[in-house]
Amino acid sequence: MKFFSPLVNIVPLVVLGAAGAMAQSSDVVISAIQTFTSVSSSLATTVNDLSVVNFAIDGFEIVTGLGNITTAVTSFNAEFSSSTPAYPDDVAIEVVDVLTTFVEVHQQLLEIIIGKHSLAAQFFLTAPIAVALEALEAVVDTFAFGVIALIPTEEGPALAQVTALNVTFTQTITTYES
Ligand SMILES: *[C@@H]1O[C@H](CO)[C@@H](O)[C@H](O)[C@H]1NC(C)=O
Ligand SMILES: *[C@@H]1O[C@H](CO)[C@@H](O)[C@H](O)[C@H]1NC(C)=O
Image (cartoon, rainbow, N blue to C red; front, top):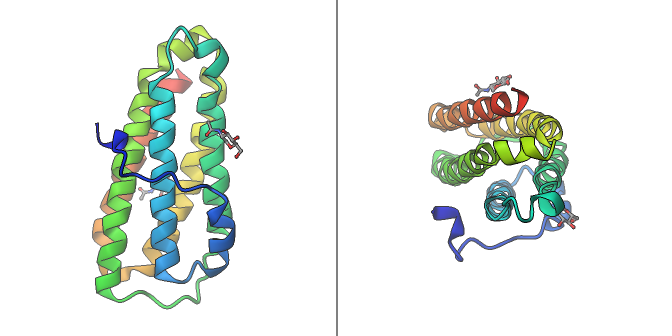
């Protein structure tokens, strides 16, 4: 599976603190998306390793891991400015490219989380996971629309990605709410 690739660097979340102040720069936006991809990939590996043997001790990492991504995306969202000029199309294409990878990796993470539903139910963790998923969906949605506002020439392809991710989020949240 793709997210196990050792080529995906695990970029520490602290990097975003310094980067946030310049969210108008396309380099910063692209590296933020790549960072969110890396942390999603890392969490997917963590969640994939959860089993009946370790779930009692480590299962809550689903909640804290989702919360960590929510925190990082939230602080980045605060840096978007409506006065930032749109990126040229060549840069917009690059942004859609990294956004597409983010969506793929994030969908894999969500599918792995769906796969742990019965374990989570056994350990009474479905409710906190549902809450963490809802919080993450909300901030990722804000992030996606912040990014899309910067790339009007590629709005269609970017929106298609965000819509696809929304579908997977809805499936995951529905699974955990039931
Ligand atoms: C969440 O972030 C904290 C603080 O950086 C870290 O110690 C913890 O390992 C992270 N948890 C997961 C599951 O990523
Ligand atoms: C994703 O879903 C949320 C509600 O859950 C909605 O507000 C948002 O507009 C949707 N985004 C897209 C791109 O469909």
